[in-house]
Amino acid sequence: MSASFTDLSSFRAALAAAPAPDATAFAGAQERNGQLTKPPGALGRLEDLAIWYAGWRGTPQPVINAPQVIVFAGNHGVCAQGVSAFPPEVTVQMVANFQHGGAAINQLSKAFGAKMDVHALDLDRPTADFTVAPAMTEAEVVSALKTGWDAVDPDADLLVTGEMGIGNTTSAAAVAAACLGGDAAAWTGRGTGVDDAGLARKTDVVARGLALHDVSDPLEALRCLGGRELAAMAGAIASARAHRIPVILDGFICSAAACALEKAEPGALDHAVAGHLSAEGAHQRLLDGIGKEPLLQLGLRLGEGSGAALAIGVLKGAVACHSGMATFAEAGVAAG
Image (cartoon, rainbow, N blue to C red; front, side, top):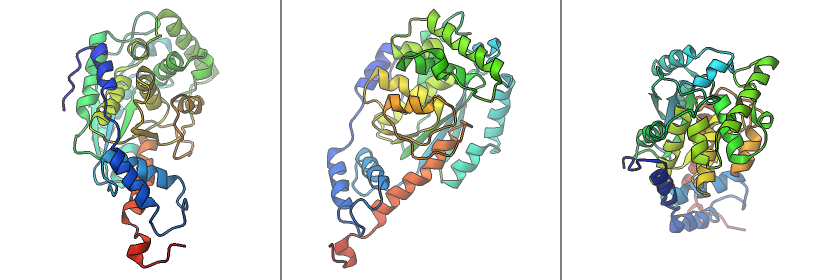
C-alpha cells in the first residue's frame, strides 16, 4: 500500500479514512482475558495492552513476531541560530553508525527481535531556518511524509519510529507549542545538553518561529516548523494505522511529530502507545496533550527510538501472557 496522497489536503483525507480496530477481536480478547489463570486484573496494565494490541491485529490471541524499528534522519537550517551543543555534521556521522550497527538503537532492536531500517532524508540539503522562512515547502513535507509512509513493512506487526537530526528538539518544541498552545519557554528544553545561554537562544528561536508563521493548522505547523525526519515519522505512524500495525511512540521528538497527526485528526493515534517518558522537560506535558500514559520512565533522552524499542519488551510480555497462558478450563483450575 504505497502512499497515494499528493498534498497535505489528501494526506489529511488519508488520516480521516484510517481504519478502526477490529471490534470482534477486541471483544474476544476481553473474553479470553477473563478466563486466564490469574485473579482479575492481576497483570494490571499488561492486560489492557494485550487487549488493545489484539483489537488492532484482528485476532483475540495475537503474537508479536515481526517488530520493525525505523530511524529517520534529517538536518535543520535552524542550527545556524546556535541551538545545539553539536554541529550538524554529527547527523551524517550518526547515520553511518546506525548503518554499521554501532548505536544504542541497533542493540535494542537486536535484543527485542526487531528489524531495523535507516532512512536519511536529504542530509546535504537542510530545511530552511524557520526563523526566516517555512522549514519546508508543501512538496518537501509531502515528500518526507511519503518516505515515512512507504518505509513501513506491511508484514510488520509492531512499529517503532526513531530519529536523528541535530537541532530537532528545537523543531519539536516549536511544533508542540503550535499544536498544543503555550509559550516557547514552556516547551523548550536543553536537548543535547545546551548551557543556560544556549537554552535562552533556543527559546528565543522557538518564539520567533511561532510568531512568524500561521501554524493554526497542525500539518502546517509540521511543514513550517518541523524537519524532514519529523514529517517522515508522522508519515510512518499514519501508514502503520492504514495497515493496522500498532505503534510504540518514542520520546519528545517522536511525540511532537505524532501530536501533529492527533490534532489534525482526533483519534489518529488510537493505534499507538507511549513507550516512555523522556528526561526532556516538556515531554510529560506533550504526552498529556495527546492522552498517552508512558510505559516506562527511565530518564532516557537519547532519541533514536531507544525508549520505544525498550518498551517492545513490555508489549511482548503482555501479549505473551495473554496468548500463551492457559484458561481455567484448559488448566483444570477452579475459577473461584
